[in-house]
Image (cartoon, rainbow, N blue to C red; front, side):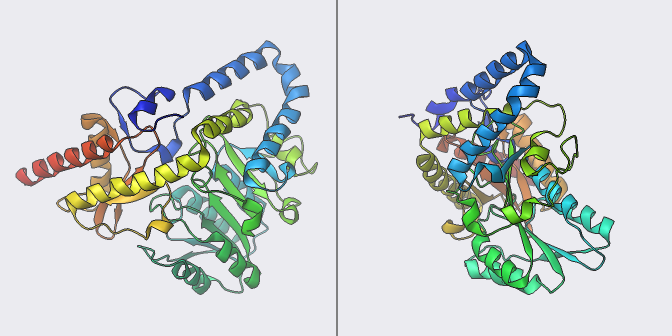
Amino acid sequence: MVDFGHAARALWPLAPGIAYLNHGTVGVTPCEVMDAQDALRRRIESQPARFMRHELKPALRQAADFAAGLFGGRGDDYVFTDNATAGVNAVLRSLDLRAGDEVLVTDHAYGAVRNAAAYACRRAGAVLKTAAIPFPLQAHEDAVNAVAAALSSRTRLAVIDHITSETALILPVAAIAALCRDNGTKLLVDGAHAPGTLPLDIPALGCDWYAANLHKWYFAPRGCGLLWASEAAQESLHPAAVSWKLDEGFTAEFDWTGTRDFTSYLCFPEAARFMDRLGAERVRAHNHAFVLQGAALLAGRFGPALAPMPEFTGGMALAPLPDRFPADAERAGTIRDALLFQHGIEVPVITLGGRLWARLAAQVYCDMADFERLADALTAMAATAVTSR
């Protein structure tokens, strides 16, 4: 059994000395998965046209079947995308929005997804509405009620995070899906952070589409996303890049959108086998408990944490920064860069509720010493900020 903590760092190609508390942004690919991808690239380049014409389609379908075995349903209901944002864009571009229709997002939505929804609404003359999800979240009903209050008879689509990106909230998407069905509203779930963080049965959630990343918490090579669509929602769904397979069916259109490097998709089974060797449930439980410990450590140093209940947290959590720092986006970026370039610590810094926060996204190669190092660096930076006033 692999020991977690710094003993596991050798399984990843992280630079020596970096405290990497940001696995959630773009992931880190394990060394053995990178090796498998490199070997597959060499195999493809030995006869690239033959691979693309004769071997690619069955290989993609085999990888999709593998994904279905992990996340529920049929392989024919899954296609690969570059990332969750690409899947979200495919759904938004395929939706026949009309003037006066409404698309609903939340105030915790990922910025790129909000932009994609705003663009789709602008082109159609539709209205983008925002549901305000309470933070800290204390009850699932609070999130459900917030969405219910924002729905109307004109809401064609709701786009809801399974795990919010900045604030790291696990939202009750099954309950929201039931609410949307009763309202006649289609539901697209942004599951960018869910695979590898939560046990998933995607079809059982009751949504119409589910867009996810496999290169974050499931260790696939970067550029590996997944899009699930219910059978009823597949007929009118097209990739954002329409190519040769237009109107030949859901999987045909998404499996070929043009010449590209498909190896990140095809190596997902290798990444999943790596996860299996670590123990998927063990990884999820460890990361959840570990990140809460790290958030508690920083809260003990810098003040009370504005945090949701532990059951609404997965492998990420917010932790307070010293309240001596001005809480604005410019200062957040300055502090993040200083932590990276002066202290060798990679961690996002955000503004929320009039204060700065670190979004801790820890993976099994992290150790409590990384959180202590972050706390010490912030203490030193806060002292310097005070004396320079």
